[in-house]
Length: 232
Length: 232
DNA sequence: CAATGAATGATTGTATACAGTATTGTGTCA
DNA sequence: TGACACAATACTGTATACAATCATTCATTG
Image: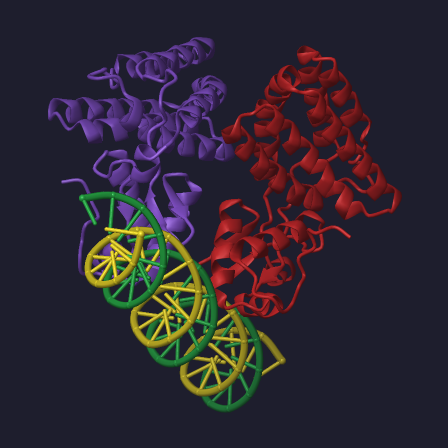
């Protein structure tokens, strides 16, 4: 169906393919925060040596999707409460302004692409494929940054979205409807009419909604390991 | 003198040490944009194998300090005119707000540290060590971000400062005095009196000054390679 | 029986060997 | 003389072997 599920076992995979596959798995919450990522194990799955896997894991570490501890290997990152707050503060700083620029620069085909995106989200939700819907929702934000035509800021937003996925996995309030695409729809409408100020406001509100769908109150930090969680 | 010049040839270096050493060399403009970075050559210098060097170069590539082309190796990055503009737009978006937060949060020892920083800059300028002065100037901005206590945004600013160093190397107007630390001094004063709004303004103006000290007018982009420069 | 310690196993860190690709140099032909 | 094809070279891409470190287990001891 979709070309993104790179689970092919036999053909030699490149580092970038491994990064992509692991990213998608993490974004779709098929790899939970804290999951250990052994080099040999992943290498067998993709049919390549540890050399390639190490490069991929380092890339993911730079994106802060995985954490690498010296002599202890890699595992899916577990953003702390503090990091979670920081990520949403950064998003609040970057994305509304970016949405404003995007609304000014958006061309008809950009709008069309965004609308297709929203349709895909709806489809994923209809199939009850929560993971995919969540990932597409993130891609929607990235698409807006791309329209704003600022590669540097887009790169920042990409890492923030990636980490947001982990944060949602860790701190989502039970059953909170994070994927309400009505906000996305309103944003596209504002952009279609080049209403930059409104796009900025809508994005700000949308981020606040996302933020309030999380439970970021002070509490015991999620355990970094089983032992740490159960012993003390 | 300063411990940062990690040029020790014999003892085994770790990847992070190589990253640090190359970063400093690039920041101090001892490695010019475009310089090829052969793996064997660097490996000999630091007395480690290509494995370690490759990891270091990949880290630097993620920071966008070096560019890696498949099968063609790494070289010191050459930000395009467009990238240069983007970096300063991003800085204009992030740093003034960060300075505002820093001014609110700064504690006496933070102020003292910043003042020592400025003194170091003066000393470097007195010794006509332009490279070191430039690097310290960048560290000053990073220090402010640290005071604002937002690790995520600080990380973004660090990469922007790093790239700014390359941009300055490529696009500085002849003899422009980029290192006027009077602006830094005024900033520290505003922070010392917790004048957040003034700190934000000063940072904005300071960035505009930096920006206008560059020649970012449209022109032939600097060549990525000799062939690209001469053939078409 | 709990606690400490050493031995074992598993996993990562590093070096090296080999394969593949891009570049450079050389020779031939028009 | 100049352009093109081909061989040689240098470099990166990948796999693998070995060393170092950490985690676990099991035996020993108070």
